[in-house]
Amino acid sequence: MSPTPADETQRREVLRDLATGALSLVLAGGLAAVHFGQAGRLHDDYGREPGPALMPEILLAALGVAGAGMLLRGAFFCWRERVSPVSWPVFWTGAGGLRALGTPLAVVALLVGFLIARGAVGFGLAAACLSAAVAMILARQEGRGLPRAALEGIAIAVVLYALFRLVLSVPLT
Image 1 (tube, rainbow, N blue to C red):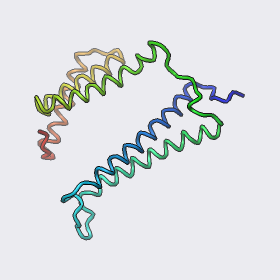
Image 2: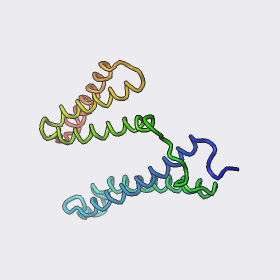
Image 3: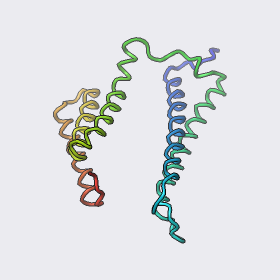
């Protein structure tokens, strides 16, 4: 019996669990440090009421628990099969693997561009451009038409902007 899982899909899933779990735990820890380091009304004593800090704390706890669960699931598989994920071969080789990284890297680049453009052109226009671009990337992967995807992305951005700005009265500028 081979010391590595026979099915490449199963190996990928285990590595995804390990990576996502570790990233979730790091993110939850960093966000918790920022959250609890804040001063002001968020952490005031509201008597018997939990106050506005309860929701971020619940979300941080959920992110931490989910990350720990995924990390433990991946680690349990490695322990049960007596394998080290470090000893597994790299799953992508050559241009095919780099092409697989193209979509996530493009979305991260778009998010960075959104943060820069938001200050220059405003939240609404930057969100519409981001949403259209992400929709076009996903449509290209599925072989759908790009103009329709761009319009759908813009429509989603408009609806979300209206929801937060007009219904919930959240200042987005």
